[in-house]
Image 1 (cartoon, one colour):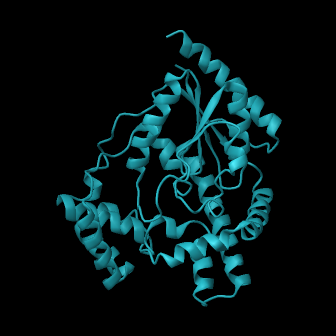
Image 2: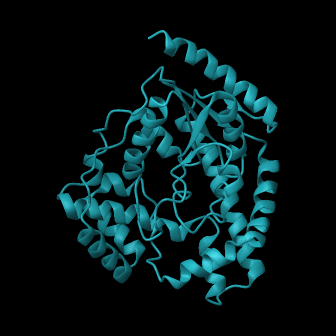
Image 3: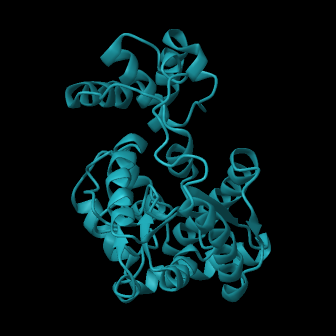
Length: 314
């Protein structure tokens, strides 16, 4: 078996290309760890690898969930464990990439053990929040689980609903489960992680250019198809970066220019939060500020060579 490589970085930082370059060099297979790139029908708006890119090396867990599926970090972790073990059993290197830091953190530190939430409870809570509004739902969460509520913003509908779902299904506050964690999938010595940290000004400019390209490549068609399904707006897929503004444009609430500007703005803000996550949650991961593919590949392969040598002696 071979150790794994974890590549984190903000949106538009070039994770797709470097993962392919490294996979070719190290006989690896790529595993998606981005919470939005798991959805079918959203290839363009979530910047999933193209068919041509996927044909170069094996890719896993991209575009395999329906947008109607809320999913969770836990469900992804279960899928990822099976895929990673399969890659290792084939004697190849798992290269796990994504901008969702929680997924990568769960691989190496485990995840809070929360019982599965029945579909009827999810539906009940969704109906409640729709009727009373997000702020009132946050107030109710504060009454039953102040520990969780103080960490959740009053407008974070998805996380508020999660807290209410857990309490409704189990009778216990969400915060009571957060001290118990599942065992990590990858233990120390079985992986190496790196963070791509390109210059922010250049990254933000790339985000703007990329979104303009997405519109040319079919992002609006994806939005139309999603709108036609009339899904619950609280579902994660409905909040893919840029999607809420494209849907607002289709409803006639915004001009196309304003929708595009808001989408770019929100994506830049998300990238800023990802930099903060890297700083706080992955303080010891080596940073690669250079955007040059050759530099990135050299650093990652050198780090992998060192851990692979130690891993093979076990």
